[in-house]
Image (cartoon, rainbow, N blue to C red; front, side, top):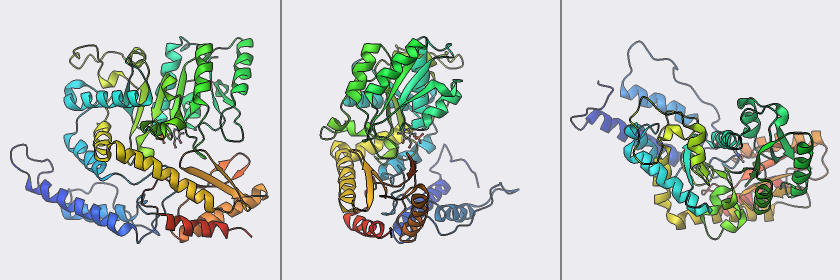
Length: 456
Ligand SMILES: Cc1ncc(COP(=O)(O)O)c(C=O)c1O
């Protein structure tokens, strides 16, 4: 048994391995509805390789163990996180990507796919309102895109060697910014958290006074981060106002649109994220709502040159690239990269603009419906304009809310609904992310009924 596909003949062994593995995957999808989001229990295959390689039959049966023990994003009750089921074309894209095994590090290792990534980023840039100089690069996840944005902002502002330089983000910003502080060798205090209002949106008046304060202390600011879609409630910071402020203060604006950026792709929903195009950089994370298989994240930049001037070191072991472009490996932190844009591209082609719009609108509809049937006399419900909401019983103490959240999450799991349990502000909430296209209104009715009866 040759473990590599023949480069000369149609490899029958690969052919039947793929056919059987695909058939098992289809079965896995088909049985998911009758299971729950989480497995009740699971067995693991041997982790280490045996002395001799095992047969395809053994491989397939070991794979089945892992599949049975996996989380099922396609179950209609899977509503806990930003992990929707994958588009079928995106699954194919991932498979072909593995087979091609091209490397987005350099043009010579991915001739068509490097160009595809460039063109796809350009399309996103235009859709979200960036101009002619714009471009972008794919990175493995929103955290990495955000980190690259901050490194670039600090470099472009000339503050890379200023240990006292700071950046601002709202108190509801994603934890990836705290991680970036660690990685960038900054002091913990370099991330200045700006309070949010009752809608969970960054307070621009507080931003203004905080900036004045740090200036009076002789410190400099290299970026302001606005969030388009916060992690717990999907709030959108006032993007246009923050953009005007950044322009006046000559500070880099990064928009973390990991959750909400994608709403800029449809004319109907783009008003919700108005102002995206005024940023210097935007993170967009199609894996979180559009059903692109993980990982899929883009860092888009109003002026593409800022990526290369920050990250390019030259790649002396590859052929120089023709024209003004840079190798993909010179536009970000990663060197070797898989061709993630392949599954993004094919997924978007499968959906078309109409299909993208439908996902966005249906997700908002589901959130509005659930919000309308959760009993607001019993629960405080927090939500922005997107597809996320969180709720907690009114008048419970911290510890009562904590106990309620654990018990209700378990009760819902037993009924095959999975919600997450964020600590937000001074208490625990349960959070539902309504981006799963398999969730129907009848499922939501059932869910709301369980929630409404969860308090004493
Ligand atoms: C607002 C926001 N930004 C960034 C991220 C990080 O994305 P990733 O998990 O892909 O690194 C998340 C993750 O949930 C998020 O909610």
